[in-house]
Image (cartoon, rainbow, N blue to C red; front, top):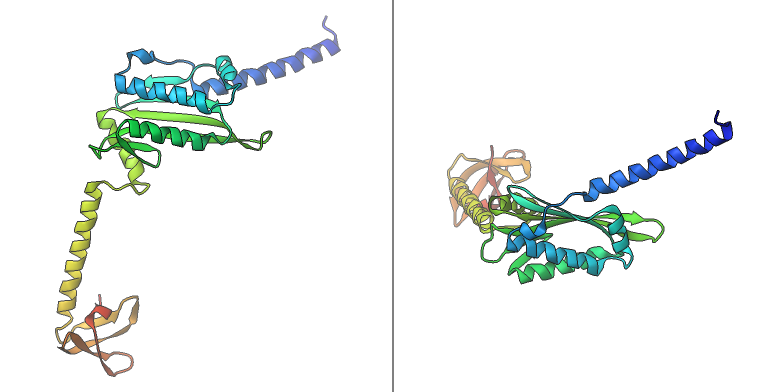
Length: 247
């Protein structure tokens, strides 16, 4: 029969073992334990991933390689619309170094950086790559040292997914700019038409954002309109640009 003291020791070891197993499972979940063969990827995708792997070595802590060998390799997967690369590494203030490295890579690819996306200079609809960088605060080093990098290399149609991501952040493509210009022209045309209509006698006009100030047009001359104010029952002359048709 096992003694009570010995049983307590076994229970403690069992709890510690469970904690270690959970920790390893979490790490494998975040990083991934299986990857495809990078050498089989298209040249452009392989080149970007190779650069990223070397970049991680440059920005990582000196002892971080030992942790990678313990917990597994970086994760690489390829899908219909994109190829995915993920890696966790330690680097004090490494986010600045990572952004700088990716800016350099984008220039090599003859692209332009917007936020965390690299867009082709000769094709504004093509996203060369898009990345996300997550940081964890380390209370022992008093800095953001643990980083998770997720890199997406879109295939043809997949570019629109990441293009739309950065468009929500403010990035404008020619289609957006053209639409904005067209909207502005239409708005101005509607305003010009409204100002012209305010010259018609009997039109009810209101002050923009002050609709309680209103009146009726009784005449027009020299680019101004004659208005009989409703509340004060007095007549004024003013520019139609300072009024709107009520409604």
